[in-house]
Structure formats: structure tokens, C-alpha cells
Image (cartoon, rainbow, N blue to C red; front, top):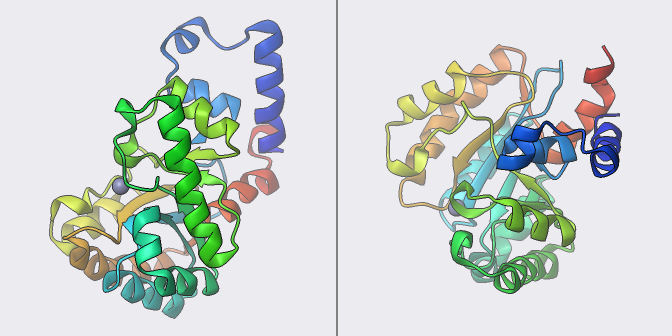
Length: 246
Ligand SMILES: [Zn+2]
């Protein structure tokens, strides 16, 4: 239902320009969310969240994260850099085999603010081919490097078949900057809500701290009755919950 409403909203907006004038002018988060082109979090009553990991695969840290997720019966979505995926295909295959989802984080972690539409399309296509060649898994989610988005980039991704997956505003752990594991865990757990998309990194120089933080985050998630699922399952839960119909 949620996605149906997004599609309906998109159709209506074209016909009647029902999007508020201020949002349409600024093309902010709410503009893209109402169109269903991008998601920052998902409306649901179920105690589920989507842990997401950027900048991998990493030969050392990704397998450690996979093991932890498996131990707790959790799933996550990994936004891969295509170039690294080609470098470590076995890690990518293992990530998919364990039931996790793979998303596109461009081929070279490009700064898309400076890319033409043609160059962004190339980055998306090359990233996608790397993932699909290794796993056969269809790649339909795009996370822009550095979280950069504007109308041309969101539309380019949408037209190439992607939903843009951002993260909940209060769920940016900034783990890439090297805080302690306790600080990362606190930042994630302190703001936890159903439907959150949580940003973490498995492919940075500080991902050791992220692994340590997960040893705190995962048991606490479950103690509170939460589970981490893939982005697809999180989006599906919005359909099941029929959030807007209540
Ligand atoms: Zn990144």
C-alpha cells in the first residue's frame, strides 16, 4: 500500500501539482519521498530496522560483520563500491549467500555533485555490472556517496531503475570518523525507532570500531525486541503495515 500510495502520489502530483509549493521549489527530502524515488526511513509499526553498511567490501571487516549478523539471525544491506567488489568477489558472494542485500554505491565512490548525468549513469552502470556479474543479484538500490542528492541525480538514478536509499536523520553514527565503539553504539541505540535506516561503514580505515560497536548494538537491538532486515523487507513492511491507512 505504501508504495502504491507513492506511485499514486507521483501520478497525482504530475496532474495536479499537489506537492506543496515550498517543497516543489526546494526539491527537498519530502518531495522525493512523496514521489517514492528516495527513502530516509520507512513508516512501520513493526520493531524492525535496516542496518546498512557503506564503502565495502572489505577483506577484513566485512566477514567479521557477516559473522555477527549471522550469529544474531539478522540481515543487512551492503552498499558496495563496484571497484572493490571486483577486487574481493568472494566476500561479495558470501555477503549475498548469507541472505544480505547488495546495493550500488557507484563504481569508484565518485563525488556525484560534480558528475554530469552521463558520468553518473556510467558510475551506476559499472557498479551494478560488478555486483550482478559476481552474484547474479539484481541491484535496485542506490546510496549516493557522502549522501549527496539533488534533483538531477535522484532522477538519473530513478530512471536507471533505482530507489535512492538515504538514512534516518538521527541514525548517522559517523563511524567513519573514528569515534569509540561505545560512542557509535550509543548513537545508534539512543535514537532507535521502528523503520529506521541506520548508516554504518564496513570499508573504511575505522571499521574496526564499527565491528566492535556491533557487538554492543546487535544484542541490545534484540533485547529491545528489534530485528535488522534488508531494505527490501523494511519497505515491504510499510506495505504490510498500511501505515497511512490507520
Ligand atoms: Zn561511501
